[in-house]
Image 1 (spheres, rainbow, N blue to C red):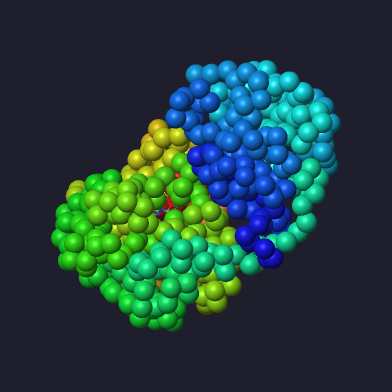
Image 2: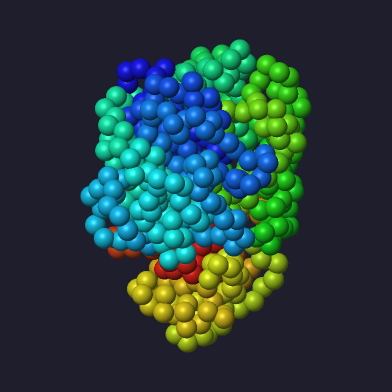
Length: 587
Ligand code: XMP
């Protein structure tokens, strides 16, 4: 990194959700890029080699929509308009923008019409990602059409002589397969930029930004021990010093064995001096007493988080002007389609706390990781020397063990249903785009995942999940659903089982082969042993889909032997359902 005060590329922010992503992609190419408001005067951008006008939610025809200083279009800088940026360019130079009502959202195939440096190295048609309502209907004088899609005849255009070009699609998102090459062609081919930035040098500027945003105020975080909040917290710690950064961890009583002690140790190792565990087990378990319905459980947990955060905020003096809130929000959390649907719900709950809302509205929030993806967050964490054991932990759901401890108010027997047994237990699944809540089919031998998939497809009106028996204390025909709710006793049973699984999984190296490994307690058994355990190791990239992972037989045998010795456990099952049609968690 050389000269940050004079970046070669400036991204002009027209309000698009991908604006920071554009700058980040340019930096990944080795060229420092900054983000400025779209209407930054051309006089302040004079020494930029290239300017990129980002997408945005507006229509050029609205009186308060994002604008540019038209002088940038006659300056010496090359200009690339993206999405709304293309429309702004056309509008300012005498082209015509058509107001759309339906728009075009999602994948499209880009057909190139004229060769251009922007598309150097692309072979044939390529996939692009569109997200727009209005579109350019006729190009401005001096421009030519470079490419189109089936529904957008001007998907890219360029001036014949001057370095003014634009695209209607989003080259910065991964769904545009050649997007990085297109950006690279703009930066190096059109602009002629030189590399001046090492993406590894991102920590310095992040810390600088934190110091600028925080100014003389302190930062507090609600931390979970998860990767994102830990890395964001550590960045603030480094930027501001330990006495200016406060971490609060809420102990819900729904955590895994030793989790609170683990998180406390983590924060101690990070050098936190102001770290506080807010005990809330009584409140959470009290509110969940006797509740069986999965969605009710989730709702109550969300409400409890709200209540605890309100309490901390109102008693901790955090609402005075000396404090701002730090959050570990990462890039996918900021876009609607990303993240996980339910994680979003939980986050919405958190964000809805009145105190936090007030901080957001008054700009008292700092999210240093908001333009990074998970893998980059892990890289940053490694550069901050956060030990790898903390950075590579499996994701753990906000509602904790509550959604892995299934409950039942009734007792019913298992039923024979060819080719297995229908368990009187329901779990959540995802079929099509909708949620399902159906029974589980258990096979006495571990089926292949192909067979499990075939069975769910064939019996989808009855079941959404297939498990195989690993080991039982009794004949499966003797088993029934047992009455059980979220009692401390059952949570302790699950915690014990989960600790066994994690110990063996870590020792054997299997833990590193899987993306996540939920252990689920189901109220299925006999009087003396009322519960059973389901093992659910999966592989995934982002949690949106998941594949079953089969563990080595020897490990499975040792695990199940040890699990069956846990007091109250009647059987061990292996979940062989991919997502879809199952979800990763059972509730
Ligand atoms: P599902 O069960 O929907 O889970 O396939 C996908 C991923 O999301 C995690 N998950 C959550 N994470 N709060 C979270 O922070 C939640 O409420 C929540 N529910 C599910 C789940 O562990 C998996 O990684």
